[in-house]
Amino acid sequence: MSSSPLRTGLQTLQSSWRHFGLRQTVLQAGMLGVVAAGRASMALDEVFHREYHDVEVRRPVFIIGAPRSGTTFFHRLLTQTNEFPCWHTWELFVPSLTARNIVHPLVPHVVRVLGKGFQDDSTLMGEAHRTSSDSIEEEEMLFVLRLDSQFVNVFTPVGFDERDHEDLVYADAQPDAQRLASARFLKGCLQRQIAFTGRTQVVAKLPYSTLRVRTLLEVFPDARFVYMARSPFETLPSHMTLHRGFFAQRYGLENIGEERLAA
Image (cartoon, rainbow, N blue to C red):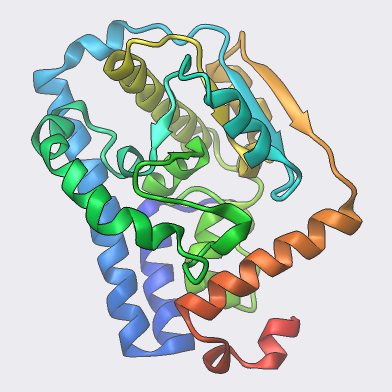
């Protein structure tokens, strides 16, 4: 069960072309460009902000559980106090401290232009998960920068492939080099965010990393976990409703077909 960011990225393009044609393939290529830029900019920190390596991540708290089990509610409830090094949506795409020095002056303008639209009821996530460019978002999205999260199944057309992409699901079953690289990448991001905010107690929401716990404990041996539990009779319908709304906005239900939606 092995993959790589490059291989997964190529798979998303192939799936986009196979299932939805040119337009979605171009959009997917644009998304990969944003991901690649975010990753590449982090190399600048090795020149201009090497001090982030000295930051310790002590006793982080990771919120895990099935999506739609209450992880978002609990995470946002805790982070209302502004005591933790949380991530605003735009920061997830610009984890580099050096790059933030460049783009940070532009953020208020982006928030003013895009913030309201992101929260509208007709947006991708809708009422089930209201999001804006300056709202607090989940740290699980950081793994998307490595294309190593179940979010890849949700946000790209690989979720419509006939074969299961188990490497995106069972993170602890990945080859050691791959799974540890992702966990260390998360650690580097958390170190940067602690340095950026000056807040030290990490409380991170990682719902799709429930099957990554073994690896997380290897990199964060003093980590604590909060597992959210909710009846599957409530979780599954909520999850399906959220995804259907996302698919309607991203692809158009008429372009997916009832047969694939039912599957």
